[in-house]
Length: 182
Image (tube, one colour):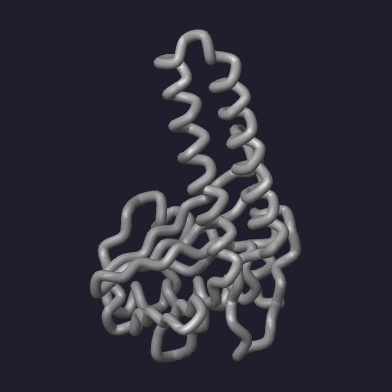
């Protein structure tokens, strides 16, 4: 296991899935299932709150709005199951059914790396990488196989292109040993 992958495993509290070099990156199905179930649970809670407020119909509008928002979130997370990401020396491509969106490395305009804890104050969590450029953006997290290889590639491209990165991203990349190497 390469050094970045082992450090990622330490930070996230879970083993890093290696994946084959040519295999697509997918969002972890277990994570998506949890997100979908949470959204459906919140739809039910919001509808129950709205039903409890039947004597005051105007008061029920807020829970009904929340139910609609959580329903949209559940459907969005379900659609994310079909997303696949493929990266190589030329760039990153997102595939969803017949639609493809590509971000060539030479058009990379920015990179952001954030740590998202499992709950407030938790030591373990996921790293979320956001890449953008040419009017396209991609958000990937460390639950995906080969995330460490993609992160190394993106950091190398950002350093080579001398992209301006925020303080949090620089700190996270330095922690992983991907920035400031001679």
